Length: 245
Figure 1 (tube, rainbow, N blue to C red):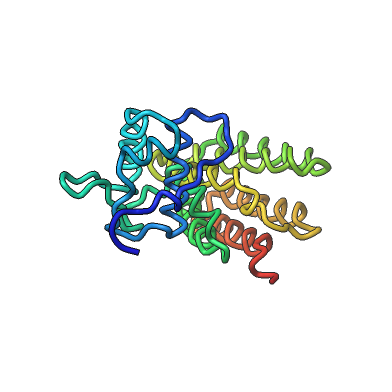
Figure 2 (cartoon, one colour; figure 1 turned 90 degrees about the vertical axis):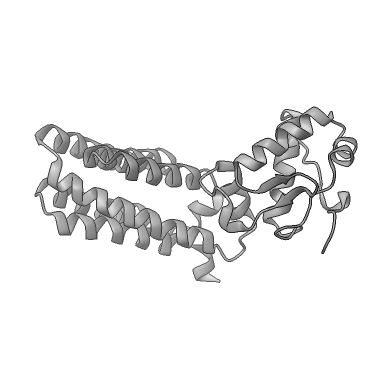
């Protein structure tokens, strides 16, 4: 497709969102779905305003937010151009959500898992090196909470997230923990990330978390890194529905 984008490519979602949010999400979805190619111009401002029943001010606000997310670039004389996917801010929840939604083979979640596993593995190693007695006790309490909630998968999952957050905090690595937690929290909001866990998922998860805890408590840097990375990658491999098709 070349030239100006066609209005028919854009569908307004049924939602009670603010008009600017609605418009932005519709365009994000269309770009991520590949309805617009890199360097292709979106429909003009007046046409978007009429199609979505919003003011041109709202269209401009939405375009500004899309530009901040790295999806478009507003160029004088050329209009609003779609940017290549390498420029997209995939840590943004709306962008990441659209990418995951349109990734039928779940390659994005595969990549997210590898990045997260690497980061959290490093942080587990740092926690093993840096955690004091108080920190180790806090991690033990997080593990005990997981054990206490094995009869409720939803609450168990929340306790699981607390355990990971505790390891991140003990690592005292602000940048890595911020990135990893953002990836983890964003991914957890999508049903596709939860996948199709096996019947023994809780038992396996507990065993792997216990291995992480024991390595950190023993101050074993290498074992802590290996246990955390293996857990994150292995857990996704077990849940990933694409592996079972």
